[in-house]
Amino acid sequence: MQEEEKKESLLSTDDSPHQDLQLNTPSTDETIVPATETSDIINPPSDIKDMEVHHHAHDPAAPHHKKNWKSYFWEFLMLFLAVFCGFLAEYQLEHKIEKQRAKEYALSLYRDLAADTVTNSRAIANLHTCISSIDSLIKLLGNKEELTKNTTAIYKLSVYAFVFPQYKPNESTLQQLLNSGALRYFRSNQLIDTIKNYNNSIQGFKDIRDDMGSMNIEFRKVQSRVLEIDQVIEAVAANNFLSRDALSFDQLKFTGSPRLMVTDPLLITEYKNWCAIKKFYMSNTAASFSIIKRRAEAVLRMLEKEYHFK
Image (cartoon, rainbow, N blue to C red; front, side, top):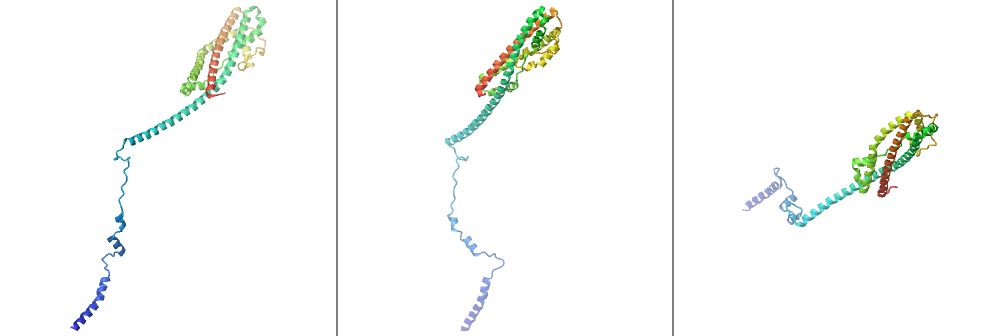
């Protein structure tokens, strides 16, 4: 019995190292999982258990949310204020631009009229001088017995009958205002009406200006039959009549000794009659220029008052 027990103990002692070796030797076909990872999978962190799901608050503007009347009211009010403020800004900008353009047009028109009134005044003064000289010429032509004695005087006075003082208003700014509709930039209705009246006086004078041109051609034809017309033309050019502030009778000079081409009473009478016609047209022209000047001055006064021009 003792011998059998010894054999069994020896066998068990020999087998144990071999068995331990087999148990501790890893197999090549199995995946080795680290101890730490295995423990994490088996035992998940306690934090996961403690996590909570947070629910987001509902957005009042979300489609699925039912709005109350206050939400609609505030949305409408904000939209209305945005549109209204945009409208006010656009209106203010447009008003500023129109005001600036009105001032620019007003200044340009003011300068045109200020220069025109000076030229107009000179034309009116020269017309009255011519009218007075034609009156004297008609008297001399009526005294047929003294024609030869007054030949030089007749020539000098005939120079005033030959010319026709005129002036042409500068209408560039005026017509631009009327044709482009820019007259609306002026806020004063009284100013607008005054400008229109000024324009009407200019256009009214244009209607009769062509008739005066035709009349003046016929007058000079008759004048050339009575006088040496070249002497008259040279005197006009030499004395620079149309650019003077006043036409001076005493400064008139002739290159030769003027003489009458005819002494036929019929032709002299015809010339005298044409002088009367020329005086009539000059008087009407002076009256038209005076109306234009008064209306131009009225526009100037209103522009000075409205825009403080000096």
